[in-house]
Length: 149
Image (cartoon, rainbow, N blue to C red; front, top):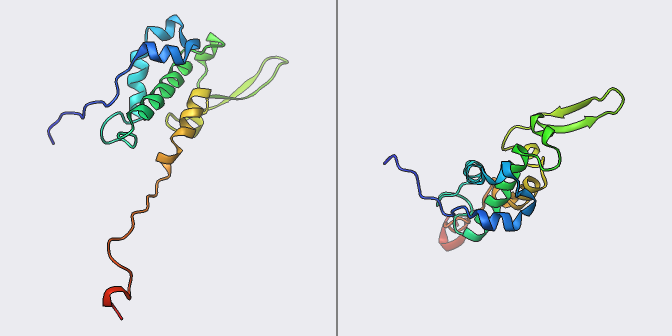
């Protein structure tokens, strides 16, 4: 092992990101976009070993979705006080104000579906999570070519 990491395939373009996600052009977000992108690369492999390595355009879209998700979780767009709540809002009340949250482990379906950006990412990457891959056998089946007649 050489100790060096593979080079990233895609680099972050903050202008293109904000063109796609103008609602995230907030001071708390804009100042940290590169950091959010770097964090997104933890969840979506941005190297030649990743499942989308041969599709740089798709990988760019996915990483931008994930960057938006992380930004929205870190600096909520609609309600800045929601940044203090850990997990997905599971239920709420009104009289005497009560609510409950579900803890969502980072990287889980529940974590991704906390924002519309994460939900889009989760759906778009379903093909990479199938787990099973079919590789046809190179060996002919029994009975062919005189084997085990």
